[in-house]
Image (cartoon, rainbow, N blue to C red; front, side):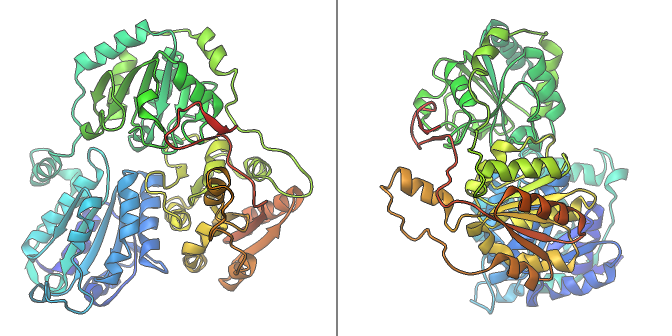
Amino acid sequence: MQMTGAKILMECLLEQGVDTIFGYPGGTILNVYDELYHYEGRVKHILTAHEQGACHAADGYARSTGKVGVCFATSGPGATNLVTGIATAYMDSSPIVCITCNVNTDLIGKDSFQEVDITGVTMPITKCNYLVRCVEDLADTVREAFAIARSGRPGPVLLDIPKNVTAALCEYEPLDRREHGSNGKLGKLMQRASQNFKAPEPDHADIDRLVELINESKKPLLICGGGVVRSRAHVEFEAFANKIDSPVAITVMGGGGFRGRNKLTTGMIGMHGSQASNMAVDACDLLIAVGCRFSDRVALKPSSFAQNAKIVQIDIDRSEINKNVETDHHIIGDAKRVLELLNERVHQMDHSEWKDYVFSFKTETEYDQVEDRLTPGQVLSSIARILPQDTIVSTDVGQHQMWAIQHFHFDYPGQLLTSGGFGTMGFGLGAAIGAQVGNPDKCVLHVTGDGGFRMNCNELATEQYYNLPIITVLFNNGTLGMVRQWQTLIYKGHYSQTTLDRAPNFVKLAEAYGLGGRRVTNVEELEEALNEALHCGHGYVIDCAIDMDEMVRPMVGGGSHITQFMID
């Protein structure tokens, strides 16, 4: 049957199982939005306050549900407003498809109104991107985009469709993913699209070699990285850790890949890692990193990182092997599949003596308990007591992010939504919106600071309009806390442009958007506010007064040996 490009796009989105789109309309994408009008009841559209918020929401939706997130934007500034969100998804391997519409094909390259080469702009921060110049290519290009976004190491894909292509007519052949096997048209298309991205079958000889190394080891340590979360390999990873009886350090992106309440958990590793994690990596004789790329926040000084150990890296992406840390052995493959094969081969072990050493060090930071003001520990302990254990936690970036990851115990993939690689301030509220839309029956907590919240607090309008009961807990210390911490410890107290002694009043801001809000200064007030927020049925902002000079502890300076704590 003949359809316009806009209708073909919508039909292809339905083929791919898309039920939610986050976006913001504009001139060049109007044909698509006009078609979207006819899909009410089949596809939900969430109109955000800003395109960046739409991209972060698609990202949060993807991370929390395991599906591909989708966002729409118009050309020019609409498209470029997606860039930070795309880069955030790229660094953290989150599967999203961003669909932009450009000026007509005959206007491309002529500096037309609201024209930008968005495929050129996003080439370094997408797995793949397309400029679809011909309506006959549109359907298969959309299908390829989704195949690439979700296959292998997940990531963002961008489709840019000129406006005249969305208006043009051509024949459309519907395909149902559930009815077309590997020999059908769609199956062959997916194979072609993902051939450079799909996870390879692990080399069984490499698996056997790792089993030998495990059998020889007396002091093994596992690192749970973001690859465990993306692969939804948490069950296999926990079984593996329990079998080889190894302590487990968790990266920022690995939160939820290994239960924080498991007795083998040593806590976070790296710059703000626990004493137990950092001391363990320095003393182990075998380090097995699963889905971890050894970033500079984990392997702060690569030349001395795990200096007494044989280092084994398991990763889906060959380009990550030996990129930051030289390994003694590696396995290329999807974390879930590699762990399945390992669990078939390893036997039950006992490393009690090694564990006694590791757990003689602290796995969590102990913050002072005071009565005249709130401390990070008090805030997070109150949250953990009052909110449901399966609460989805979204963070912005800064001290509050580290405090939350240090102190919350995440139980499943997608429970922690945080910008670990790109470090995007303003990520948290958009991601929380995406998570709440994708998980309407779960409590969603947005943890932020007064610096990060300012950046995208306009999305409170989205939260209010769609009646999303997101609870925002704001660590308000009147400063860019993490930057101030560095200025205190490294820059001799030169507090240059980090003090935030200025508007807004965050409670009044929440009320201006039609939401609830309360400023709290002690534990009693905080717990009253949390209970009110949990049961009020709408969004709520809790403004927590925190001392300006609270620090994230421990801390190891960049480029330093992992046990060289500046503060502990």
